[in-house]
Image 1 (spheres, rainbow over the protein chains, first blue to last red):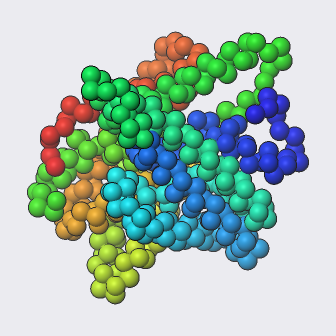
Image 2: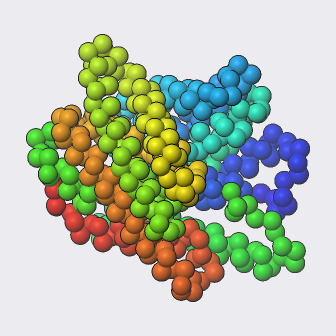
Amino acid sequence: MSALPAPNPVSTWDDMMEGVWRQNPTFVMMLGMCPTLAVTVSAVNALSMGVATMLVLVASCGLVSMLRHIVPKEVRIATYIVIIATFVTAIDYGIQAVSLKLYDALGAFIQLIVVNCIILGRAEAHASKTPPVAAMLNAVGMGAGFTIGLLALGTVREVLGAGALFGVSLFGANFQPWVVMVLPPGGFFVLGSWLLVFAWWKKRKRAMSPTPIATSRSA
Amino acid sequence: MAHESVFQIFIGALLANNFVLAMFLGLCPFLGVSGKLDTAFPMGVATTFVMAVAALCAYGLNWLLGLMHLEFLRLISYIVVIASAVQLVEMVLKKHSPVLFRALGIYLPLITTNCAVLGVALIQTARDYTLLQSMAFAIGGGGGFTLALVLMAGLRERIQLVEVPEVAQGAAVVLMIAGVLSLSFMGFAGLGG
């Protein structure tokens, strides 16, 4: 992570890391909030949701990018949605085949990956203008950023609300779980707290460095 | 699940299982358009309308796809139908209320990617609701969405008048309020289905 704003002709690596950190979809751009809050009751759910979204994101961005000279401008959004829906259907059946338990835990949110703003946003803003490899690398970065965001919420909520991490009990039998953390309000509280931490950290950094740091909050 | 009464489903979707505060559907407009009361309410009504249309179409489509054994096309056909319904609402609004159309701006076409709309279609399919039950679910859910949006907009208008600590400004304070709101909606647990 560099404090300097990225120069205009960014390298592919920087372009990828952009999504992981400076333009993190969860904490900076606040995109894809519904799955972020809904499935993060445990770290396992969070991780699998993140990976599923990332797979759809990478595959759709690759295909959108390959088709970018063929698809007419007027129908591009509709085309993107159909492409995304196709991959989501594949992932949906895939998860159902691998683990039925996970499929039930994630519920309708697997199919709701279709309407995750991150994917359509990436397809429209990035993949439709770049060659496939660069588009897919960028998608990997964004997907990783999203997964990190989900994990950050999922681990905190599982530790506080169930006293466990990835299903492994941490504190023994005497632990009194903070149940509200795995209930809906907990999602809002934990995400809000993470944003507070980041805002405080940014403020502290700004106070310590002599020159003002360019922030990417405007996205 | 499909034996619940229509009224139970309606109240459940409206309060106990509020779409925004308990099921986390439709959070983008909830965080995005809830700044002012004048836009929050019409946005809620427009979304409710789209949800009702989507539920109706989804019911028909599901029956049709089941008849032809093409269930794997469900998701794709749902999303296309929703996109068309949103287009319809957009045209009607543009003609009858250009001011509102401009106020809602980008969030109007974004109803297409509102999880609440697709969510209603998917959940009613998963639960095997009848047509009447689906409509109650969609309208109750839309009403719940509108309620959450209006409550949030009212609270956010008050927030403008107080001093919020610098680190909490913006999204953080909104999320905290949403958490408290969600906590209070948990009091409805047990009502309805």
